[in-house]
Each structure stands twice: as C-alpha cells, then as structure tokens.
Image 1 (cartoon, rainbow, N blue to C red):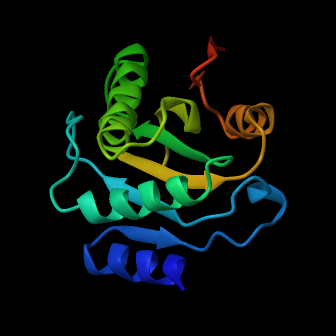
Image 2 (cartoon, rainbow, N blue to C red):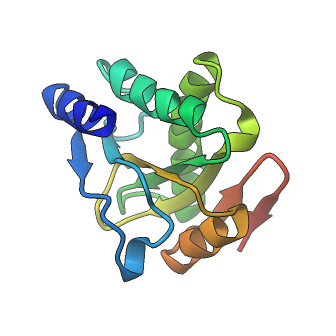
Image 3 (cartoon, one colour):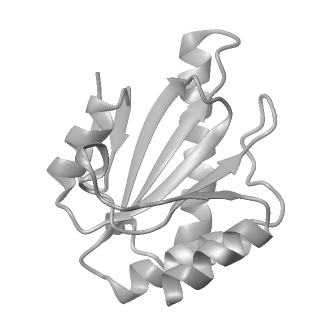
Length: 155
C-alpha cells in the first residue's frame, strides 16, 4: 500500500512512475521506478519532487539491506564528456536530497549514463540485490560510470 501511495504521489507531482514488475531486463528492481525530468543543461533538483524523493528515502529506511539506485541521463546534444559529467551531477542532486533525509551513503548506487535516447532525466529505483548485480545491470544498460560507497568505476 505504501508503494502505491508513493506512485500516486509521484503522478500527482507530475513525475512519471513506471511499473517495477520484475522481468528479464529489470531483475534487480523491486521498488517504484521514478523518472525526474531536468531542463537542458540543468543539474538542480526539479521543483516539487521532494515528496517523491521522501518516499524513496522512506523505503530505504524500511529496507536497510536494500539500495536506492540513481541513474543520471542527458540528451544527445553537446560534448559526450560534458554530458557524462552532467548526468552524474543530476544524479548527485537526488543523492544529496536522500542524504539530507538520513539515508546512509552505502545504501545508494549511482549510474552515470551521459547521452541517452530518452533525454534529460534521472531514473531512481530500489533494489534488494547485491551491489555487484546492480552494477552489472547498470553496465549492461549502458552506464559509463558506477559509483557506490566502496567503489567508483568507469568504463
């Protein structure tokens, strides 16, 4: 019921929430997948998403063995290196909010994708898989960098 409320809240705030039912491409995902849209070139958290991030933080507090996975993406305009850095800064803006809400850094995994066909966004999902499984899934989907509290790796 709490996940349903979080999804309804995300929809009310204008963010998109996609089904998190496991399938071959989403095996590590267990919680709501939320997409936050950003303005071109911006890396600040969009206005009005605090409640959505709060719902993710609540899940993390209720599942201390779980992870919140934050993926940063950019559009296809501009320099690839700058876009990768921007995608990580966008993810960091969500991470900072999660940390401010009391989530432990070791519960957060960041994937930097750089240029993405779906454009300027941060995708956030939750998982009970181990870090290696989450990292493998992010890399298989095209992440150029993966950061955890113990690991910072680039392709």
